[in-house]
Image 1: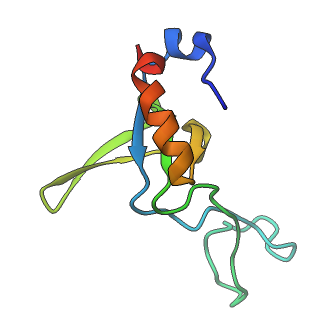
Image 2 (image 1 turned 60 degrees about the horizontal axis):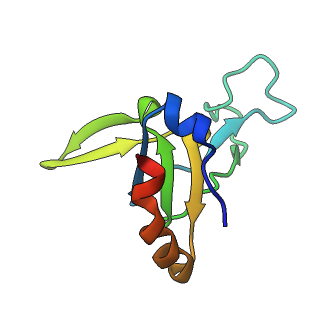
Length: 107
């Protein structure tokens, strides 16, 4: 299995959650867009993205200090940048094993 190093847990608050939505990734400029802002599509060319690793339904551990809390339709969500993700679990069998160990990791 994969364990979060004790130094991370001691120094940074860690939180767990399930991915309910994701963005396309980080936009990067095409070779013809020198000096332009990569998220603008003024040339008519398609934007290119570095894809996000997390998928909808994944269970993740992340650094809480990097998450941004928002309210949307009376629900509270956390927006977490990809760089703050410590662990992504996709398989339900792995998640069942991990859930039993999670309280020990977050203490």
